[in-house]
Length: 109
Image 1 (spheres, rainbow, N blue to C red):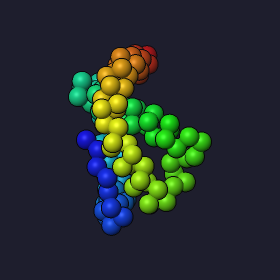
Image 2: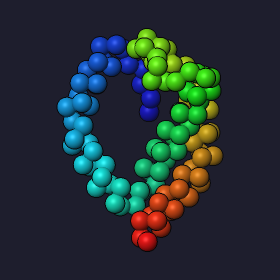
Image 3: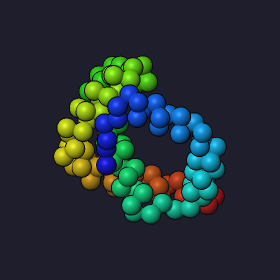
Image 4: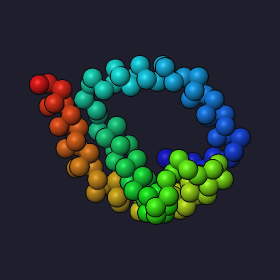
């Protein structure tokens, strides 16, 4: 689910994502026209849980202000809280489902 990346791996991933940015944007645009399946909703809930825990760890700092070493240490701390992430994701799932339902209702109008 969550992997701690080395600096080299992080740089390689950044290059890959930059190269594929337009393709990813198009796929995202197409996917947003459809209703998300339960697996996708679980992933969204999990991402929300990770973001929530990261916010707690960072307190008043912004994630984008961190350097590469700071991001790596943050990922390590987040990975150590995987049990908490699962619990939070389970609790956030109804909220994510509701948001998806609202999004689809707004799209129909």
